[in-house]
Length: 355
Image (cartoon, rainbow, N blue to C red; front, side, top):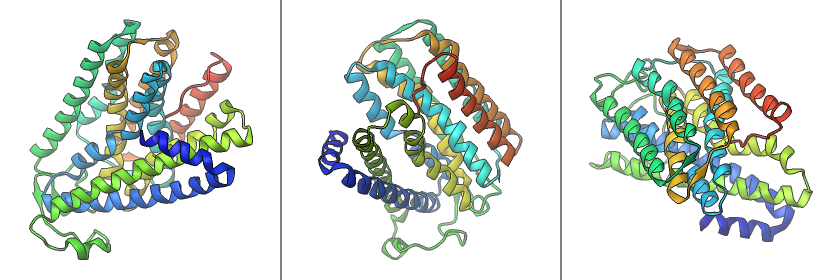
């Protein structure tokens, strides 16, 4: 697999090479995220479709998490894969959305059904967790729920006559079901000369978005591979590294995909990333684990980890419902995430798996 090949290559480079790979990975990831934002915005304008819907599809589906879940499940580490899925749902809210609110508070206006779907999605796992042992059939059901929820959001966006973020810079010029091809609020990039006003410009921008998304995944893989070599060579205690440096590295991608669009006046992509990632993590990603092998659910998932996801997600949904994500909202969400870690380590003596 690509990830294994990258890890083997980085391991052969030694500590200095791994540090260089970390730097290159950060650069690749940053550039790819910047390009993805620009391409998705132009694709939405060129195809006259909802930018929020495109963001849900392109950034909400966690390709790297899916690969990781498949690898872990194939290696009889289904419990770790489940922890990673729940950890992603927690981190996307407790770290990514929290940090975005702290750095750049922004207005938000989402339909009530979108917020309800976001807040209630973790509850879908409750009946499955109560079964204690999950099989292939349960995995198919969860993947089906994921497809249904994503399909519903995309269908609703195509039926709307106004965009979700109608007060954003793009929203003022683009309707969800149609709009202008060019917007003055879109900063010019070099690729504009290449694509220009070609008849299939929207599709070309969409194709470039796919390439940029591949760059995002590749950059994330470089960061993960480089960090593993650094841990081994510096003999850093894995728990300490995982709870600090690795958490930052693994959430760097989502932070960029959420904070940067908000900073550039395109919150559709940032919030789409948060909502899509949570929906996927608690349904599709967990379901994929069971497509490979059966899964035994530990008691701590029902009594601690899943309730934490439910509480933090519901709190985030309430803040989004208020119409503006404020700085103190970010501090509170981040505080809950820190408390979750402290309770996990000092009360139940278990280091949670971070996304």
